[in-house]
Each structure stands twice: as C-alpha cells, then as structure tokens.
Amino acid sequence: MNFLVPKSTKYKNDFIKFLIYAIASNDETKDHLRNLYECGSYRDKIEYEKLRKKLNILGKQMYNFLKTVEKTHISSK
Image (cartoon, rainbow, N blue to C red; front, side, top):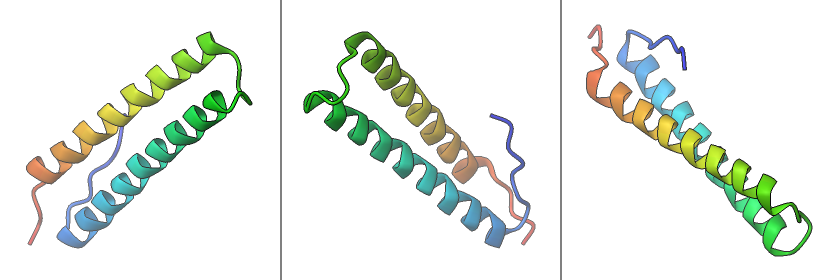
C-alpha cells in the first residue's frame, strides 16, 4: 500500500477513521461471502477459499497499517 500520511492531528484522526471504515468493510465482505457459500448461492469451494484467504490477508495488512499510523505518526501540533 502506498498512502500519504497526513501531518496534522485532525487529518491523522480522519485518516484513522477511514482506515477503520475500510477494515469494517472488509469484515462485512468476508461475512457476505461466507453467507453466500453457506446458503449454497456460491458453490465454488476452491474460489471461495481463495477469496476468503485474500480477504483475511487484506484485513491483517490494513490492521497492521492502522497500528503503524497510530504509533508512528508525528503530529505537527
């Protein structure tokens, strides 16, 4: 991921908020995928497993990035 991290506290807090939204959207997508597979609407088990793994990896990456922003961001104030 190649993000520009804002300099001020206000923008840092907004950035963190939107990262949290992105993580929640990823979690919601994982839930929808699981529901589709479990109810039989999505039947390709191999493709389901590939998508599930990719969503898990993406979620971990976003979470780690969020923690890095929270810890290492230096505010101009």
